[in-house]
Each structure stands twice: as C-alpha cells, then as structure tokens.
Image (spheres, rainbow, N blue to C red):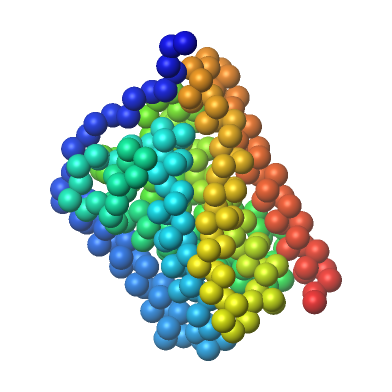
Length: 256
C-alpha cells in the first residue's frame, strides 16, 4: 500500500526572528509571573499559577512532538534554539515557554472566571478571544518561518489554520474547568498534582478534538472530506466549550 504520510518540509532556522520570538515569549511569561508575585494573586491563591505554568511546560515535552507528526507541523530540524529532539521533531525553547504562558495562563483565567461566577455567554466570549490570540501567535510563527503547518490543511486561508486555534483554546479551557472542579480538593502539598494535570487534560483534549482532521490529513482524503473533517474538529471543540459554559452557568445560579 502506498504511503499517504506527507513528508515534513526541511527549512532553515531564521535568525534573528527566532531569538526575537523567544525573547518576546520570555517577556510575556515574566510579566504574568510578576503580576502574580507582586499583586494579590500569590496571597489569595498561593503557588497555583507557577505550578500550572510548570505543568503546561512539562506537557510540551510529552505532547508536542506527537501532535506535530499527526497534525503535520514542522520546526526547523537544525535550530540553535533547540530545547530537545523527539519523534523526528526539533522543539525550540519558545515552545514549552509558550505552553506555560498561553495554556497555563488561559486555564488560570478560566478557573478564576468560573470561580467568580461567570455566565455561559462570558465563557463563549473568552473562548473566541483566546482562539484569536492563539491564531495570531501561531500565524506569526508561520509568517516568520519559525514553524508552520503543511499538507492539505483545511481552513488555512491566511496565517494558521482556524481549526487548530479552536483546539488550542479548548485545551486551555478544559484545564481551567478541571481546576475549577479539583482545586477545592488540592490543598497544601496536594497541589503538586498540578505539575501533571495539564498533560492529561491537554493530551486528551487535543487527541479527541483533532481526530477527524488528523485522519483526513494522513489518509489522502479529498479536499472536500478534509474540510468536512476540519469542521467536525471545530464542532467537537465547541461541544466541549458548551459543556464548560453550562457548568459555569450552573455554578453562577447555584453558588457553592
């Protein structure tokens, strides 16, 4: 049987774009941590934010190379900013750091919003805003040739594919909902579990929601079927957000 796996493009690592992007990522994460350390968050909620940051960064090591292969995403194979190599992918430093501030930060925000009594409409507003931020960040990587999707990607009209931003945003929201459910039971040293929780939530979310488009991309399906698969992936994301929005609405109506 002829292989339907699309070979990964081989691209040079652009400089100084990579270094600039890494510095920007570090500044963003440092700014969020400074807000946590110098304001009321550290006193009110302890070390939850940095633990979630560390957990989401760790999840990048286990998850990123796998889904880069299934979703057809490349990084330069030879890169002076490489953090590690795995599953034929070279993962640069700004990936785990980006995981930390984006997935960790969005999950922390969702947790706080649910905790404060958010409506279902508020959850949906945050979801689409988060997806837009993700789309811009991933698109910047593509525009700068730092990394990009390849193959017959659906909904890839300008910048990065829209379906992927839906999946990324959903990953952060599922983690945020998990925090809302679990934090009452995670006090003291039990909060160390936050180092591993993101790996479960993001891997499960990305694996399930991307299944339709992943099958299409790696099976030489027709463009029509591939776009339908992309639509199915986005629909699965919105089902997950609907559940989270209803959870938040019920909590608002019946606060604990």
